[in-house]
Each structure stands twice: as structure tokens, then as C-alpha cells.
Length: 269
Ligand SMILES: [Fe+2]
Ligand SMILES: [Fe+2]
Image 1 (cartoon, rainbow, N blue to C red):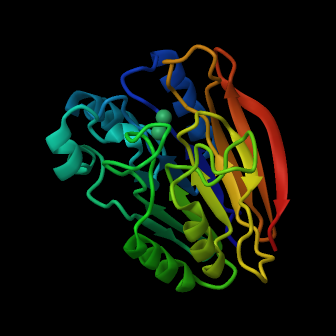
Image 2 (image 1 turned 45 degrees about the vertical axis):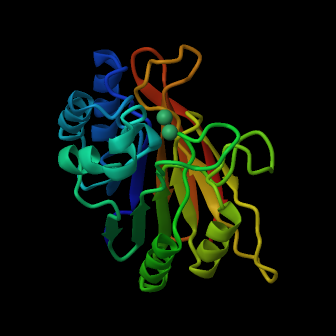
């Protein structure tokens, strides 16, 4: 029997607003963790500029593989309106990955990535930053998870979160989350990995299915390397899966190294 699967989850790198000390500490911590899969949940850059994507690409090349990477709202041009509406993901595809719906699959893990960025959403908190998923994206996700081997941990990677750390409301969550959660419940998705809010936390999604007992665990990674805001802790997550219980460890930067802050265990089977 092989080793137990370990997912390292990093997010919101925001190149070029990082430091060599942080980059090296993250690289060391990830090399030591030696994950089965490195999941990167978007916002690789600050403003989606080619040079910023190039810095992100070069850095990702120094991290463990395999990697599953998806874009965040900062990887979509903000002020270049033509690009924003007609070439939204072009730079991400040129510099980082052609595949905006990546999949990692082995006997014990089924990990599916999705692009939740939008050129525009109607939202009082800012049209530019919120995300959503189309009916077609949801159908693709559903099909992939329903085809996964029984017993595999089903993990969706999506930049925008389904829950916020403050309350039970939809504030700061992905648009249309009820529709999304209903599909994920049907497809028996276990875990959703997100970023965007720059806070490391985990919580269950609200249950919408009438007979719903299936609770989706939402795990958020903080910003791994961004130094843009002083009061944000730099963190990432390690997820250990033993076939029944998922142990979620938040690793926090202490100025020199990433060290274990806390571990929460969730019984999923
Ligand atoms: Fe971000
Ligand atoms: Fe974001």
C-alpha cells in the first residue's frame, strides 16, 4: 500500500508583491512536505501583467509537482477593458497553463479545478472582483466527480469561496452559491479549496438539499507570499487524507519559516 495522500494548498501569491525570504521559506516547507499534489487556487499576480505572470511561472517551476493551478480575479486584467471582456484568461493561458479545467486523479484523490473568474458580476461590493460558475462549468464538474472511483476524496479547487469566516451569509462568497452547492451536493463533493479572502480557515457549506446530510467542507488558504497588506498573516494548508478523516493543518510564516499553527480533523466517511 502506498503512502497516504497529502495535498499542499497554496493561494494568492500576488507576484510581484512578495519577498525572497517568503518565497524561499515556502519552497523549503513544500519540499519538506513532499505532497502528492500541490493545489494553487489563484491570484498568482497582482495585476495580470505579462512580467508578473512570468515571475509567477518561474517560481512555480521551483515548487513540487504535480501541480494543479487555476486563475483568480487578479489574474484577469482590470483596467484594460477590451482584454478584460474578450481576452480574459489569455495571459494566464500563455504563461501558466492552457488548461482552465485541470484534473488530478489517482486511486484515492479526484481533484478538479475550475475558473470562477468573471469579467463582470453584478455585486454591490465591486463588479470587478467577484466570481461565479456557468451552467456548463457545473455540468462538467458534476460529470467528472460522478465518474471518480468510489472511495476517492472528491476535491474542487475554485478561487472564490463558498463561505466567509464571519457569518453564515453569502457576503464575499461566489455569486450563485446556492446553485453551485446543490450541484456539488449531488456530485458528493467532499471538499472545496479556495483563496481570495487572504485568511486561512475551514467551515462547512450550508446544506440546501432537502434530504441533505452531505456536508461540503470548505477550506480556505490565506495568502502564501503576498506582502501587500501588513496585517495579513502568510499561511498555506496541508491536507492529510487517511481514507476516513481529513486533517487540515494551517502553516504560518513566523518571519523565517512556515511552522504548524493548528490542525483540525474532519471525519468525512
Ligand atoms: Fe488575492
Ligand atoms: Fe482574489
